[in-house]
Length: 179
Image 1 (cartoon, rainbow, N blue to C red):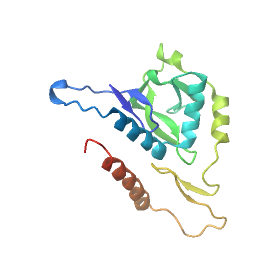
Image 2: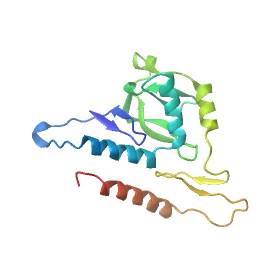
Image 3: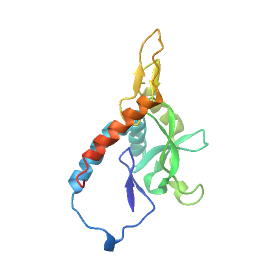
Image 4: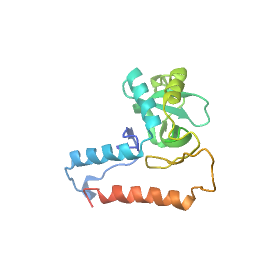
């Protein structure tokens, strides 16, 4: 079974479809358009540039950093599991956990990883940060920023951030063709 993450990558994921308890609806182009438009809103441009670099170095690879590892590398999508976690770049350039971690740390799958740590660092560093002062990463692009030289008592509350994320999710669910 395949699942798509917020970067538009398809990963193997746990689960199965029981044909006796499901119905088939052909909405392939609508689903692809929905995924594409969601990627534009929810995929960190910084992570997307690193994924593009890794895919260019080895087709079918994305940039990932294993949990508790100091190094980023290109990982073959086929070697990642959706339920496992990795570290990705958020839309402010910081690190956060994301779906698609290594399914194993030894064996054949690990040979599918491409270590280009220095090159990936250059890719990350070359990306313009949204704001040089305060950037609060969000699940939807763009991040919340406070680009001022003299900061005042203007701080994003968690309720505001939650409202921002909920609005994006509601919009996405409202566009689902099967609803």
